[in-house]
Image (cartoon, rainbow over all chains, first blue to last red; front, side):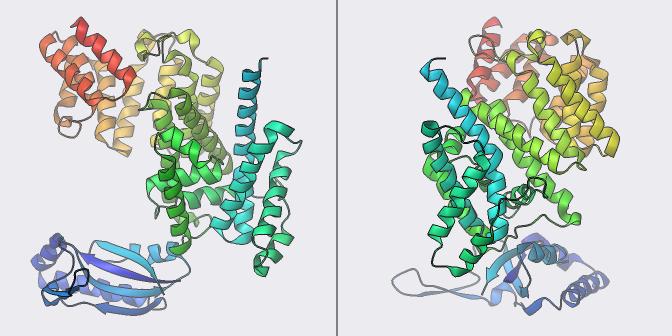
Length: 112
Length: 404
């Protein structure tokens, strides 16, 4: 089955990342690189999104489409990237997601 | 036997037969069809047919085979156009009871962590225990349509999210087992503490929980926590007859008539617990809770209670599974082992977490009363009364407040 893992950042996580020293930051990025390498056989696609201030949202639920600045969520958690994986079932997708070394939340959604 | 009694007896037999066979039937159908939802519909259909016909025709000699034949025939009928299913159904034979039990897979699927807790409970009761949506709704005092929707949504998620139908691999087992144990424990608690006045129905939930715990302990003999949960439920059940007085009021442990306790059940549950503890040496929250209840159950009178031992067990429990509620119960043991002053000190930093928990205020009231601080005690009892919806607890608190 195909799943999309959506990596969700929190304000707290972004602050922690910013507060890190250069070496620590490098180690954090390396851990992410290793994670992608480890699961390369299952990852069919992956994208890191640009920061949320670059987002534009179109709302289609009114009479006319409304274009606004910023991400669609009004909360403080933001999808910062995603990976598409091809695995047997939800348990395998959960296993991959569990080893994700960066931001604290991963949403898993079946896709086709 | 009058007609009414006969009918009630009939219902009990039906409920037992259905519970014993529905899970195994569902399990064999799921593993053959690979379709959780279709299998579940077939089982429900067979169960409903049985509930309609058995009271008239009598329970057949082999109810399992009867249910199986109905499900298979119905399956062929419904799925006639789908040759794939048809070929599979044609091969279907009732599995030998000795074959490895697929009910285990079924329970783990129903309690998958990707399902909400309410969905896990509804699905387990329906698929593994064979309860109807109406019976589940009655037990939890929610509308039947709510239960039906929960089940439909849960089945859809099992299919669409790709929740696998299998026993989780060994390394995931302990973590997944906790999910299953938690569902059974919740069923038991809902029935035992029963936040609703319909106690007769709530007691059925305790029975279902005990049955599931026994099944799990039987299917997973290497998991001491499964044995621990079974022992815990049995020990509580063994003391059930003394928990309420003739007027339906809750009787506190200290005031219970211990001659009403089922001594044999207590001995059996304690032996089960000891065996599990000795064989595996892996204490867990359910074994520890059961051991605490066993200490109470074995005491000849309230005064003979081994509070020192209970306190040791609570220390282990707080260490393994720290929670404010566990610390509150530990404080009650401190009251008897070390006195009310020490116990009151234990409650000091729990107030924030348990502000809305009636037992916290009721316990505080007792300790304050022990220390002669009557006015504070009365205020704490009043606060507890505001917070509880349980009529038995309300009655008890009202009595205490009126005595001052």
